[in-house]
Image (cartoon, rainbow, N blue to C red; front, side, top):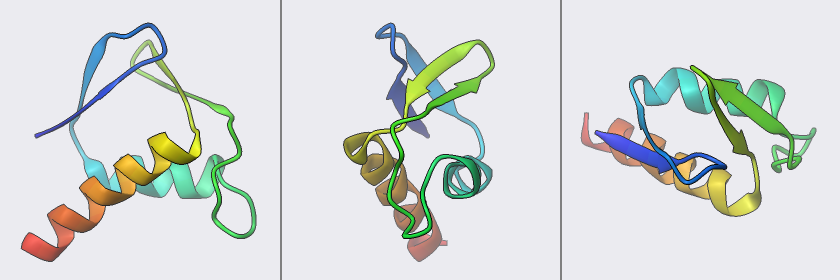
Length: 68
């Protein structure tokens, strides 16, 4: 299971890392797939899509898909 902290410091479980990561790419990155520091909302939790946050999600995504 993958967890991240939202902007308020609350722990949030990412239920589907594939969908979560793809959404970040589609809506929260620029043309070079670099995070754009926008706010992602999911189930009442807010996340600022920074470089650090995006890299963490990318690690979760590749870890899951390499081990599957």
